[in-house]
Amino acid sequence: MNADSAGVEIPELLADAMLGKLARWLRLLGYDVRYMQDDDAAIAHTARAEGRVLLTRDHQLSERRGLRTVLMQSDRLTDQLAQVVEAVGRLPAGAPQRCMACNAALVEISREAARSGVPAYVVETVGSSNDHPFHQCPECGKIYWKGTHWQGIERQLDEALKDGAVRCMANKDRA
Ligand SMILES: [Zn+2]
Image 1: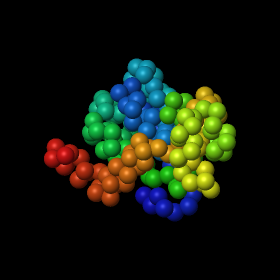
Image 2 (image 1 turned 90 degrees about the horizontal axis):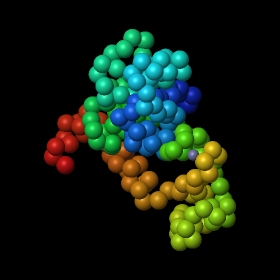
Image 3 (image 1 turned 180 degrees about the vertical axis):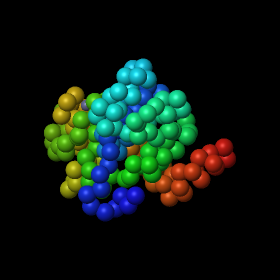
Image 4 (image 1 turned 90 degrees about the vertical axis):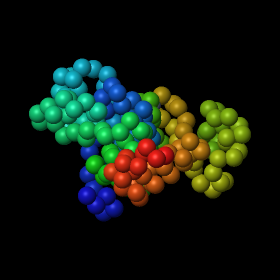
């Protein structure tokens, strides 16, 4: 899949109960991820009904008929992120991130607007004066900014993708 060309259709995703952390990080990267802790039948039904690609570590669930699935190969978050990105494609640069908690697309807010919900030292130090590092969830109001943790996961993901997720997984015991 060539994720660089314009108009690439990135499917919506559904993460099962074991993959809550993966779901939150995929949202922050901009993927539309529904997270369900229901039983297998309900998860399979929702994935079919909403046309979502199912992410699961459960072999039996992944074999259910009529589902598009990505059977996760690793317990490591970075490997899981890389596997999903390789399977469904990379979002175009500039796609909005989503709220880790409620999956709503984040909207950009000004540095001034961020002052109400962000520690003062963060407002003063994040980004430069002429960019827009602050985003807010329109559903729950949570404010996000590109701090070190966010940049760290993006860098790890870039490295995992450069290596190829498969090789990265094969090498994980050496880390
Ligand atoms: Zn939210």
